[in-house]
Image 1 (cartoon, rainbow, N blue to C red):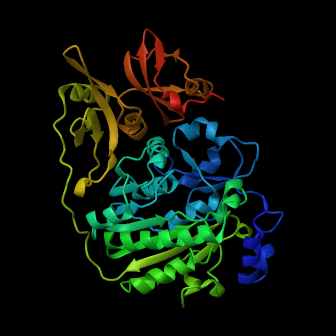
Image 2: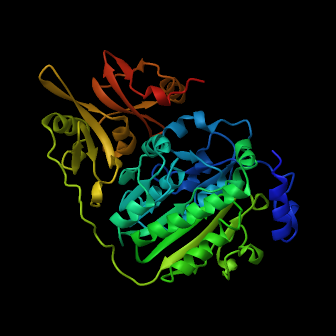
Image 3: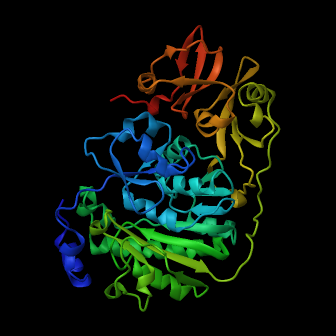
Length: 455
């Protein structure tokens, strides 16, 4: 869809060469995916097993272009298994620029729908702690579903404001990603709604919100920690302008070079809030192979270990029904730390989880299952997410052929292949497709109905 005359005119005024130089008319609409290193490491191995045409993208490890417009990777068993996340290629850049290391404490402030959180969890490699936060309640369900599909274990998912998180986790995080809500100019080529709602009023509103988010979350970063600010828009008010305003208000932060070789630096003509070292920030336009991103990397002065807040989540004694299940089905997890919240049991990571100030937590670790009570008895019902996150610990597995995997994802019952009666992990090519229950030589389908391939 053709952008607004307002947008084209602004590009002509601000950019050397104007709109046509950065938005070539013959550039294709870029489609892509980012491979999950929790499933496939190193992720660039995906090129050898990809069931559809791909080529490497330059923005992050494991990032690929989808080169066949007819491909439907969202229906493939690999997608259901969390092998990759469908993501516009340049959207993978901000999480990679954060430079997460195993064992760190990381916050994804505006996490939905979950692609960048999945990247951050992959960089942590199953260690440390990831806090994935989403302020808008309606966007939390996709976030939870995607983290489950990708097999993310050590994560706390919250539905909170930046102000409450900044206060509750003062000085706690090693790294913070703020992929801020924006006017979405990088979405123009694929979403008509983004063009229809575009205006100077929207830009000004977004810039105000972005500056508020940065101000409120800054206290949560420890001295010496790194914050990456990103948007998928080209508006100078929301990009260089927001960064410059933040640096003026927070002299304890400094702008670092992203170190990226893709895209281009910022544009001096875009500095609407005073001097900024524009060569240190990064912009991606369609001419660079992506739909659009802006990124800035900021470091907080000093060097101090993470400050530990109050409100540590203490492990719970396992209910007898849950212990019996785990000892049979996941024996290596029987002595792992769990917490019972209501009737649901969650597997905790090795890093202590804190819930200070009664924060709204939607997930604490991995949902392992629930205690179901009735007629004076209780039984333990395992959760899909346990099998998606902990396949390596499962004592029983049924491996499916490709034809069987497609049937499984449609909700069909299969022949068990002589597997032992009871619960079992279900896999395809060694990747998890949830759980089934073997009975009478049949593999009963327990793949969640809302996730099935019905097309």
